[in-house]
Length: 121
Length: 121
Image (cartoon, rainbow over all chains, first blue to last red; front, top):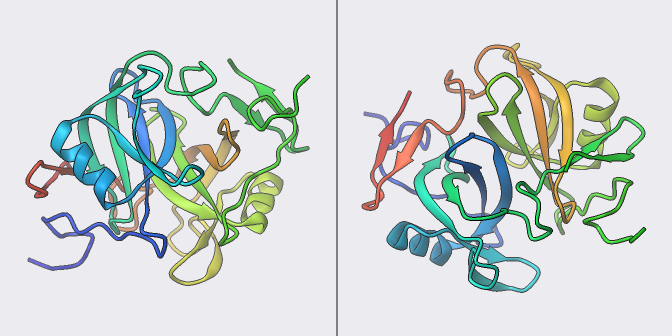
């Protein structure tokens, strides 16, 4: 059995120089990408222990539990790690919209070749 | 019309202090998350101009066109930007596997509460 990040059977997340790892939340029902946020070791630990998505806010420099003020929490059905262990996917049951703007997903705008944005929601 | 990042109608990506933005590639056919990688301004520009996914490799510190050596290219069907314009979603037609290990998606392992990993592919 190899010990490479790709074939390892134990989690060894590769946090960046800022101590963070990218986390994508996808909808358990539809598979759709809902949001991309960040986790430090504590956010990852709390997510694993509680089954509720926790993230690190780079702008507020604070740990947060998704939905702690909005109520739009994420129940984690499954956590997946990528090949080189520097990104995670949270498969979630999303209560209400994932986006703070009230849209279902944060990715509600399409970028045109001219860099103009079209709204999809 | 407001000028907030959330409601803006023109792309103004918020690159991080390292000049990079997170990019998630999702499968146009299934919606499934395939991989998370990074883009600098040039990678984003080339992706918009050519319709082929380009990324920035943090480990190799180099621009790369997805598939340039493996042939596993990504034809970009749609580029989406998130609410605060610090992450993009590339909806792609993926040739072959997205992951360099030969798996369809890079997220082929599930993290248990005990941090052991189970392979799904």
